[in-house]
Structure formats: C-alpha cells, structure tokens
Image (cartoon, one colour):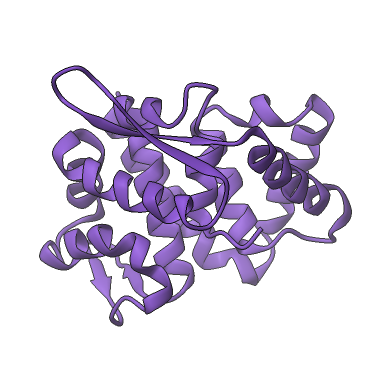
Length: 211
C-alpha cells in the first residue's frame, strides 16, 4: 500500500467510529505529530539537533499532506522539539489543520470516507474501510514475520503504534514478540542509528507532555 508513515498511523489509529478519537485524544495527537516527524526526518527534510529542529530543504510535492506540519516547524525553526511537539499535541486549533491535511490526503488515495461530527464545533471525521486496515496490517505482518529486518518506515510505524497502545489491537502475542525481537536487533544496526535517536527523543518529550 503506497502510503507514508503518518498516513498509515492515521488509518490504524482509527476505530470503528473513525478518526475523531485521534483529534480528541492528546496521546493520539502527540503520536500523529511524532509520525510526521519520522516521515520528514527519514527523508532528510528536517533534522533534530540537541536543542532544536532544523529544516534541510523545502517540502517536496509528494509530501503536501504535511504542508501545515512543515509550516509550523518553519515558523518555529531553531526552537526545541519539546516546544514544537507541545504546540502540536496540546493545541487543538493547531492540530486540526495537520489532522485535516493528512485525512484529506487519504480520501484521494484509498477507501476512506470523509464526514463531519459535532453539533456546534464541526470536526472532520475520516472513516477507513475495514479492508484498508486489514490490507495495511497484512503488509506489516508479512514484513515482521518474513523479512530479515524491517524497513526504517515500518520501524517508525511500529514505534508510534506501540506508544499509542495499539500494537495489541492488530497483532497477536506471538507477533508482538517478533516485533520486540526485530526492534531489539535494530539497536546494533547502523541503518537505524538516526531513527533510534529520534525515537528516544520523541518518546521522552511525549512522556513529559502526558505526565
């Protein structure tokens, strides 16, 4: 399935009622932002230094679903990742634009229905067809069980699903054990060095936000 990290996270963070629980839950908003950080960092669009988020290049055309996210980073370039992530995770007004851009990008790519919810304050609700979720989970499951090592993109997706407490929703106890083994092995692989450091930093910041 030709989707990127935040798009996959968005779909798998939905329940039977759709994506509204992402928008209404601070933890899920935080990991939506984290998944977007992963997407940009893995494509060398941004870097996280010890003290700030740095932009390396302009947002490419195939990442337009992250335009609002990128603009927030641009306006806060040089500020700490804690500052940027806190704004995205805790302020619904900021999150709403990011949430809508990612949701809208899915409507045009896969079987996702867009609706609205709320009597006074209207919010978009994106509802993926169950077959879309099943197909996505099957792809990840196949990689976990058959590949010698998982791709950096799948690694990042599993990290945000774990942080969001969603791994157990989609994977059996045996599969979760395989995931843990693959992630443990990655610690000694230079391929994942940048990804591991980013994962640690984002996890620390989110833990602080949620405490």
